Image (cartoon, rainbow, N blue to C red; front, top):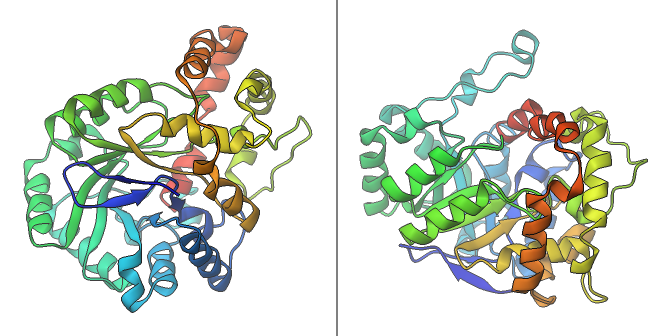
Length: 348
């Protein structure tokens, strides 16, 4: 494993991190507390020291799982990122709301309480990276929120301030504002070999601002893991079951063209992570790890061959040409690529 430092902080993260929502929610299958804790502890033993969660994941379960996985003196062995902004305790009931996104609140009194409760659930007196959770521009424009964040950073309750952008493709304006106008230490984005935009513009903004980036969905919802076939069927509880059939069929056509990234000693899933590591501003990626097999595969990605400039340029050219697929036929798929169900998963 290799490690990188988050800009403007003393926080160092593993290049491959662990997104806790895969074990704290049911969107990738069920995990008992014991199995989730065991998987995270094994990840730490493999050198993965960065764990990303949110207060909403499993209604606080993601944070309590981390407390159980790394209690007491072990807390300092890991770097924990969590998120704030959803008033998830007052979300409408599922029956009444149809799994609607929870309401957001950005008033300082609410954030004070959110910080206190996250620290309690984590069993910690500090949070390494505290992130806005899917903020719109109105949240990022509130000066009092940023003054509060700077205060808790100075008090040592938070080591770095982050902004986790929403799952829908877009969010460029919010990301650039957080990086260039608000001075966020780190911004979490969606970026992968099948979805380069708006990531490329956000990378440029991070480089201009001297800030860092975290990447989630590095495998494009599993497409770049190289395990799907035209006959793949997802469980009804799996968020990918809500996607249109064309998402799968067109995705398979795209990854067929990425075989040049493969090596005898690297899987497509590992190459997809190396694709991200070639960018210095990206300090860590968060693959969806939901079993031991994936943990071992992705945890070893740093040991596989790097992606060179020629390979990156080839991927970029394919993306800009939509991988040779008809754009009219793809338009509907692109609109559905980040479904409302994934927003619900990110706030569950």
